[in-house]
Every structure is written in structure tokens, then in C-alpha cells.
Amino acid sequence: MTTLITTAHASPGYGFRQAARMEWTKLRTLRSTFYALLLTVVGMVATGVVTMANTKAPSPDKAAAFDPTNNVLAGVALGQLLIGVLGVLIITGEYSSGSIRSTLAAIPDRRLLLTAKASVYGGMVLLVGEAVAFLTFFAGRAALAEGVPRPGIGDSGVLRAVLMSGAYLAMIGLMGVGIGAITRHTTSAIASLVGVTFVLPALIGGISGPTVAKYFPTMIAGNSLAVAKPVSDMLAPWTGFTVLCLYTAVVLGVGARLLARRDA
Image (cartoon, rainbow, N blue to C red; front, side, top):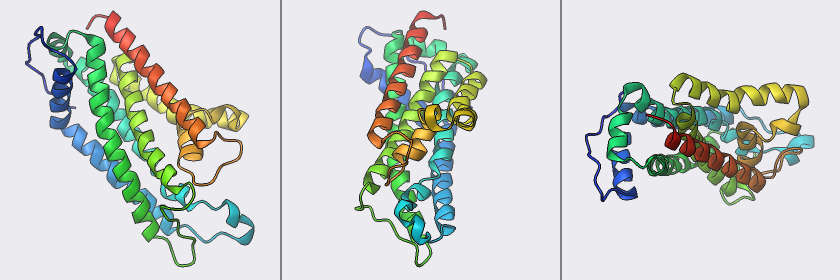
């Protein structure tokens, strides 16, 4: 990852606006930002199209539970990995390159710095996430074969599922930022992110079923947020969304506290 080293100097008048402007300059000039977002868009749309192209009309006994909206949003699992890793890198990349010292010289208030990083990255990913969620939905919908029920954006639960899927990507991105601030090491941060989103839910789900696994982010996304029809034994959409908001706040809060207490 190529990291831009800021040469700004601390001044009595620095604040959130100045910190956010600095973070936006760094973020938009990193090649990794462009490639990660491009892969997210291409990967999610391609996954949605392929999934819907291979979706068959349900048998009469399964028609009531058939949820093509959930199928078309299957690419969220790939998108969260790319977005989460990029969130990690915008923190750990500065530590690995040593440019964190220049950043802290410009913005010595570390909580303000993390707030600016999270706000800029979270806002950008929210916009991209919502755009790609809608693009994926309409592209995947067009790929459905004749005879397969075609979801409409005005159908019950569909708009909410698409919007929540985009918001989910933003929250995973912010969790990546928080985990990066906690560990300060790229490898351990990415391992933690992958463990929480992919490995642990699969292991725990295989042992105890959905009782505990339903509280993990990926399970919430796939079975609570990105669904137009409720899934039994899983969290309700708004309950899952609230749980994810709490996770995001806790991870960022811990990251901010550790960032403020430790040496650069």
C-alpha cells in the first residue's frame, strides 16, 4: 500500500474540518482506495448477476419462503471483505510506513484524528455501498430467467434490504478502521476482521446452530439485513441493524481510547 505522507504542521486553529480535509486528500490519492472500491463494485455486481442467472423458479411448497432479493445481494459477503480490509489499511498503513508521526504532528488530538478518518472513510463507503447495492439489485433482477418471480424495489421489504446492505458495508468499513486502531498491525488486524466476519460464525454455527452465530456481522447481513422476508431463528432486520451499530460504536470507541493512550 502506498501511503501519502502529509507535511502539514500543527497550528492552534486545527479542528475537525482541517483534519477531515487532510484525511480526504490522503484517501483519494491512494491507489489502493480506487482498486478496492472498483473490485467491490465489480465483485458484488458480478456475484449478483451470476446468482440470479442461476436462480430457478421455486416449487409450489417453497414459493412462500422464496426470496430473490436475498439471492441478488449475495455479493455483500465479498464486498465486506474488501471494504473492511481497506478500512484496516488506512490506519495500519500509516503505522507501517511511519507516516503516522507526520499525521499526529499535524493533528495531535488523536481522538479527533480517528473521528476524521472514520467520518471521511465511512461517508465515502456509505455512498459507494448504497450505489453498488442498487446497481447490483437492478443488474441481478434483469438476469433472472423467465418464469422466476422478479422482485420490485417497491415490494415489501425490498427497498429496506437494499438500503441496509449498503449501510452494512459502511459499518464493516468503520469496524476495519477501529480494529486497525486497536492492533496497529496490518496482518493481525485483517486476521481479526476475517475471524469475526467469516471464521467464527462458521465454526460456532456448525457447533451450536444459529443461537449464537446469528449475532455475528456476516450472519446478520445475510439473514437479517439483506432479506425481504424474515428468516426463522435469526434477528429481525432492525434488531440486527441496531446490534451492528453497537458493534461499530464499541470497536471505534476502544480504538480511540487506545490510540490516545499509546505512543505512536
